[in-house]
Image (tube, rainbow, N blue to C red):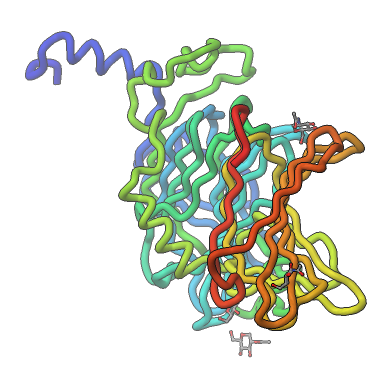
Length: 405
Ligand SMILES: *[C@@H]1O[C@H](CO)[C@@H](O)[C@H](O)[C@H]1NC(C)=O
Ligand SMILES: *[C@@H]1O[C@H](CO)[C@@H](O)[C@H](O)[C@H]1NC(C)=O
Ligand SMILES: *[C@@H]1O[C@H](CO)[C@@H](O)[C@H](O)[C@H]1NC(C)=O
Ligand SMILES: *[C@@H]1O[C@H](CO)[C@@H](O)[C@H](O)[C@H]1NC(C)=O
């Protein structure tokens, strides 16, 4: 095998092999342990195929022998066909401990003929609440499809058949935690989640169709193996150094981000197949604020009893935030629609857009303010050049150490 290549090329190839771990289809026995289910999960065809099954007594699952700190993980999966309501097939990465990190693909089964929901989450330091859910654009039970997780120091990207469906960027600079330090194992399982998966348990698992079976194959893992105990260095040794140069891993995936051509695909998925995006929490108003259109549209309503509101899940330190907003039409005098950033405490900072309603036909006033250390009095008010009630317009806040715009 060495003959056709100039020596230097061979040296480079061997060098990067020692740092990286690769696992392809036939290697399953070497790299994966079946960990639970009492025989319900099996490796077949000389480790080419892995089946997981679920019946009324138990589900089953497997995990990788190794821990990884960053990698590109790809599997092919064929889901439980027919009536799979209540079953969840999962493929995920997870670290250990009470402040664990986790990156999830979970497939929520459904009644025959109804679509599966692909539920995704990114949990950092034990905190999740970042669910995004999708329908798939194909029947995931009729054939194998490819699901992959790219996890590097810059981002986490989830792909379905090579199409990006979710991007979670490293915003540690904005004080949002990112899975950076904790090695994770790769896991897969089939389990019963009837109390959760079918709208909080409305539809029960129909055990007369058991055992339910899902099929995994073609594992492809290109990752940095972290030895246990973790005091021993990662196989991507440079990653343990400060000011590391990720490029020195010599693999494309370690610096890969969403390409411009992929952004269109991601938007296509979000526009057409996204069901739920929990970037915002509705925080008050007793049901007067509602997420519609699969989380794409948030409506707020006001009556005599109360107002409503929402807040972002994450706290930001510097950002550019765009919001599209369509205001209360007609006689909106006395109402205020607000969109703002605010910190907590008595010496808070705040950046405000407030839209003061008016009687029909009269213009809204856009009231702005910037508070620092609890002190405001920097109001500026504007009329708008357009009618903000007939259509959505974009209002952005740019906030960085130099300026607020
Ligand atoms: C099942 O299918 C129904 C009908 O399309 C849908 O409303 C529901 O969200 C689907 N998923 C689950 C997990 O119930
Ligand atoms: C960063 O986030 C943590 C946890 O959410 C919080 O306790 C801390 O106050 C935040 N720091 C800044 C500078 O916002
Ligand atoms: C459960 O599945 C069986 C066939 O597998 C079907 O005859 C029965 O009606 C189903 N039960 C429910 C409650 O849907
Ligand atoms: C409402 O319209 C009137 C007439 O143009 C204007 O004087 C007033 O400032 C507007 N805004 C509010 C909040 O009343």
